Structures are given as structure tokens and as C-alpha cells.
Length: 133
Image (cartoon, rainbow, N blue to C red; front, side):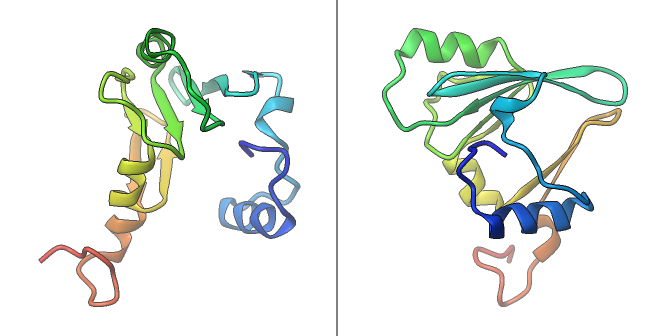
């Protein structure tokens, strides 16, 4: 969990959808993560390699050079806020804009790594917003 204050409903939904029979702990409490008030940096083990993740937690101003340098040093950036164009991780940037376009995302860190989005699963159904035409 990106934030320790996530409610029981969110924790239950994420655990159920992930097939996890426990309470997902906050990212800041994980041994593989280093967090401050604004962001977490985490090393996540995939099947064949490890990935570095920058998870931006606040909406507060972060200096441009600090932010763009951090983005360039990681594989994946996740943020609920809009991230500047200069934020270019090595593999994937999931910010507000990207997530509005894709819906929820599942990351599979096997070889090769891949993503699956809610939009991919919804397809061109009439009830899907912004469905393909």
C-alpha cells in the first residue's frame, strides 16, 4: 500500500484481487523500500531481474532537477498526480494522465515484463468510457 492510511475497504479489494490472504502492509514498512514524506524508492524483484520503483506520494512541489533525476534513475514511476514530460523512467511512467487513459494497471515483472490495463479488458463495449471505435 502506498499510504498507511488506506482504509479497510481498499485493503480488502486489493488483497482479494491479488489473491493475497493477508493484510497488505504500507510500502514504507517494507524492507525493500525507502520512503520520505514525498516519495518511496523501492527495489522489486521480478523473475529474471529487479526493478526500481519511484512512487510519488505527495502533491507538494518537488524541485525539477531532483524530480527528473529521480525519474531517470528508476525503471517505473507511479504517481496519482501529473508528472512533467521531463520525468522519463527507463520503462514505464504511470501518472494521472496515463492512468486516466488506461484505467487500472497490473504489472507483470516476469520476462519479458508486461502490463495489462483495465481498458485492455473492457475492449470496445458500449459501457466502457473512451472505448475503441
